[in-house]
Length: 387
Image (cartoon, rainbow, N blue to C red; front, side, top):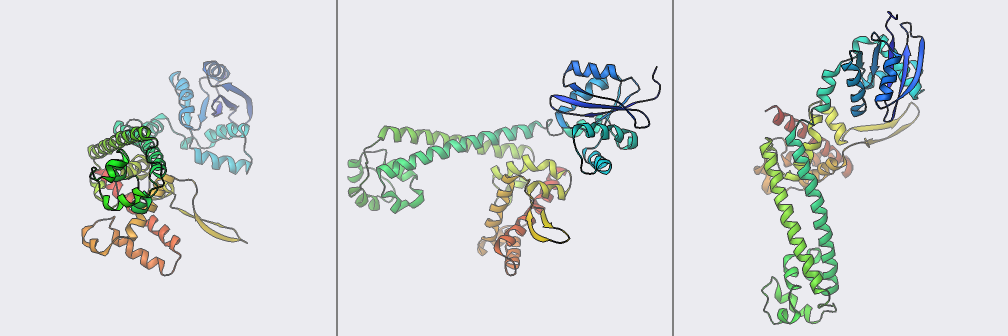
């Protein structure tokens, strides 16, 4: 009967898991592959003893079932940190990496760094922290619905604009890029004769009439299709307004009403920032800036000095919001200077931009302003969450 404990390292995968069993002196006893189902788990259970110490990485949902299966049967199974196990493997095998080495290094990690492994409690708290927040899930659902309806609204508006250019192309001379406004929509829902006779009360009729008399457009073409698109557009616009109101109410219910008072933060932007950034604010400022993509990296070595750039892997949606906020702040009119206070004071960033742009290119200055806004957002969200 085996009395000396063995060590089992498992490299977790989607369909299969690589397994390595080592002795107390790190000698290899067995290596094999198990499937990610009950048959594979039972095969591993017959290959080890109750005294075997099992170790695996917390690879999200792929490691949960494996962990719970052996934990419920009384086996000594623990997790190792993904970063520390990676450094441990690189220290032993330098730049080599494949599944066979991974399971061996994980088993050796349990032998050498027993004190660094951890049980399920902290792992499952981190894993289920976001899933348990019902309000956050509801907010995400509202945002996804709003974004899908906004795409429908934009598509309908593009189709209507195309019909306007067909039926009354001269509208661009009066309304420019706003030629799908309410006046033109009302105009094209009535006959040309009624408009020319002044029976339709619309804005800027005096400018429209002479152009409509000489118009080269096909005014009476696709009238029914145009009316159907206008009806659908109004319905989509009404639904998006209701969704924006629901998102605003949900943010207030979650305690983020103060966040909506900052300049340039709409309920949609606030919802995107909160849904994607709240978990990172619970870690550190550096993690939050990394998530937003506002950390600068350099491409240089001992012989080559390259340029600097922002990290590539980040939330592009939030970085776009930061960019638009920076443009809003640096273009704020002086007459509104006394209206805003607090962290996200536009004129604080406007003064900083004036200072940076004097010695740096404009895009570099804007990037620095985006970084400053990200820092303020971190402390604003952190304070709201603690309250």
